[in-house]
Image 1 (cartoon, rainbow over the protein chains, first blue to last red):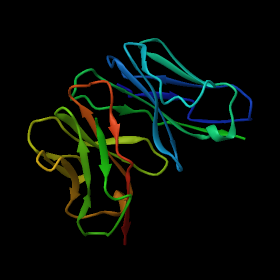
Image 2 (image 1 turned 135 degrees about the vertical axis):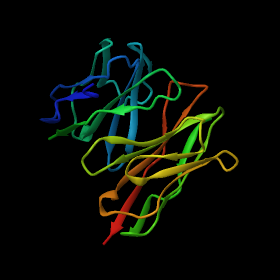
Image 3 (image 1 turned 60 degrees about the vertical axis):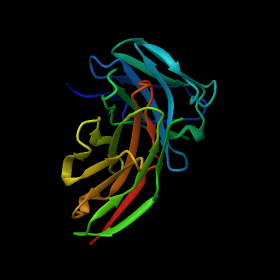
Image 4 (image 1 turned 180 degrees about the vertical axis):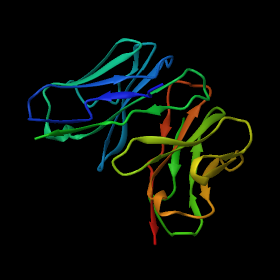
Length: 114
Length: 114
């Protein structure tokens, strides 16, 4: 398996633009997680899905952020409009249902909003 | 309630000396426990995991961790530090009674001096 795939790896955009981050989880995993990492706040869970259904989005900063999982092999995290404070590394991770299953992380998307 | 406490935000050791990164957890149910490593500008990689089998768990790159239920601890050790071990380390809990979430510690940055 290729692991968790994220695209793009780097994104530079101007304030006010829409940004879409993409994630392909490992085949057979039914949990998908979106995290954000910054120097100031560390690693934060934004939202997670189980079987394509959002379970907990309490970590989503505000309405400018939205996430979807239209099928088991694809998820998006969208920021509209983007702001400089959204600059961070965004990680996607997936895991199986078993309680002993670990999370597998993607390489991350480094977002810079100018 | 679940929580993970990494007792040291920064640890500095000399190359060739032992490494100890401390982690305490609280969990309502018997948990699975994980240690992840993140090298600079990289994603998170699984070092090792405990899943209620042997209490002493061996991981990659010479790391190991011991689960101590009475102390609710899962400290990470390595007999001899290498320069390449310089990274940030995260302790993670996944309660077996609640497969939905992974609880992350705040991370420990390990510095290895030549």
